[in-house]
Length: 468
Image 1 (spheres, one colour):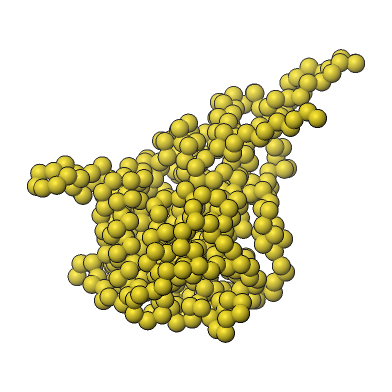
Image 2 (tube, rainbow, N blue to C red; image 1 turned 30 degrees about the vertical axis):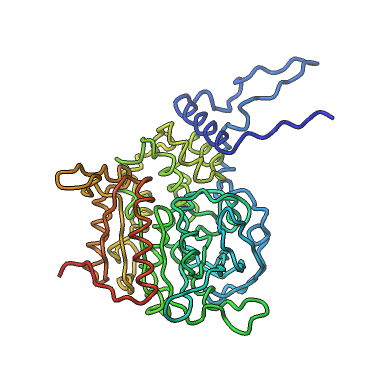
C-alpha cells in the first residue's frame, strides 16, 4: 500500500494560508478566475492539479457566513446537539457525561463531569454551550461549603477542537498561566466553560459573558449521578480569566445584574486580567504588529456573531477567513510574524468603516452606553479586581530600580480607564498593576490574582480601590 501523506500541522497550514492570502491581496490578477487565465488542455493531455486551487477565493455566491464557521467537531454535543425548546431557561442542564482530566493537566483530579447547557448568543438567540465541572481530590479547608471558581481559559481560538472541554481530557493544556492546578491544589470546585460557544466566537464579549454565567448556573444546580443533591448548591462563586479569558470574565461581571440577577451576592468576586476592553484602541498596538494574528482572529471571531462584517472581506480576506476557521491560540499567535494588517483583507478602512465601528462599540467593556444598545444596569455587583502588565511597576529591588515594560499590545491605560468607568458606575473595583508585558504578566500576576480570589472565596471583607 502507498502510505498516505501526513497532514501538515495546523499552525503551518494557517501560516501558509495567510501568507498566500497576503500575496494574493497584492496581486488581484493572480486570484481572478477569468477566462484565459489558464490554457485549455489539448485533447489527450493530462490536466495537472492546480497547487493553489484550495487557496483561491470562493465565488461571491458561496461567501455565506457558514463558509467561515469552524469545521464540525467530533463531539456530538457540538456537531449534533439535541433539539431543545427555545424557551428553555438559560443555565438549564440538557445532558451530562463523566469526564476524567489526566495528571498532566490536574494531578489531584477527583471527580469530573461535562454538562451541555442552554445559553444565549449576542442577539438573545438560544444556543448550547459545554461546561466542565470538577471536584478536586483536595479537600476544602476554608469556612462554609467548598466554593466554586469559574476559570475562564485563554481560549483565543477559532476552532472547536481548541475548546477546554476537548483539550482538558485529551491534550496537555498549554494555556497560561497555571491557574487550574493551583486552584485545584487549594481545594476549589471548578467550572471551566467553553464560553466561545458552538460558533467559536472568540472576542464576542456579550455571548462569551452569558456563557460563563450559564456555566455558573449549571454548576450550582448540578447533581452528580448517584448523589442526593446538588454538589455546589450553597457555594460562593469567584471567577478569574486572562486576556481572551479576561474578556469573558469582564463581560460576565458586567452582564450579571441583568442576565443572571439571581447570582447577585453569589458571584462574590471577578478577577479580570489583561483584558482588551475596547478593540478599537488596539489598531495602533496590535494591528500590523507581531500581535496581528490574535487581533485578526478576534475580529473574525466577532464576525461569527455579527456576520454583517463578512461582506467587507476582499478576495484575500475570504481566503484567510476560510483557512483560519479552525486555528487555535498557538497558531493565531505564531501567524503574527507576518504582521499582516486588517487592511490587507478588506477594501474598506477598518478604523473608520461604520459597520466595524458599530460592532466594536457594541462589544466595548466599561460604560454601559445605551447608544450602543447597552442596558445602563450593566454594572458589576460583586467586587472586581482588574490586573494588568503596567510600566509603573518596578522590576528591581530598592529605590531607584528600573520600571517594567508594561503591556505593549493592550496598553495599561485601557485597563485603568476600565477601572475608572466601573468605579464611576458604582462598582467596587481594585486596580492591581503587575510587572511584565502581555505574556509575562500572566505569570507575575498568579500570586496577587489568586490571593485576591482566595480572599473573596473565604469571605474576607473587600476594601474598594475606587477613589471617592
